[in-house]
Image (cartoon, rainbow, N blue to C red; front, top):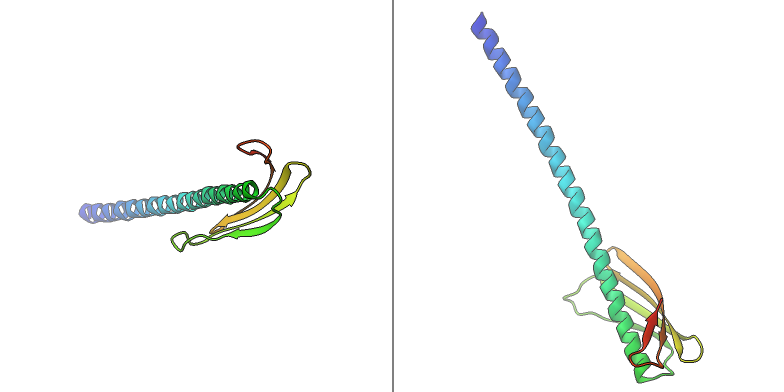
Length: 128
């Protein structure tokens, strides 16, 4: 009789241990997937910010080449940068100032910013 109880106790302990390990593994997997999603969101926002910066540099280049430049443009990126987009609009802000409105994105992250470019100095000064 005692041998039978020892087997049942051992089996019960084994099943409970496996259930606890399985629950811990599932919790670890869910935590890792949350970290992966947040890391992806952060890296997308960094790429979107870099895209905004490259679009701003293109706007400054256009303004420096023609101080009277007003209008919109789209920066296209090669296929090696999928999901990247940038549109900018340059408007007159009076005097030697131009407003540059930029809408840039990468994958799920979108950024819209407005900069003021003073093209009287070399290099042009930027503020937002």
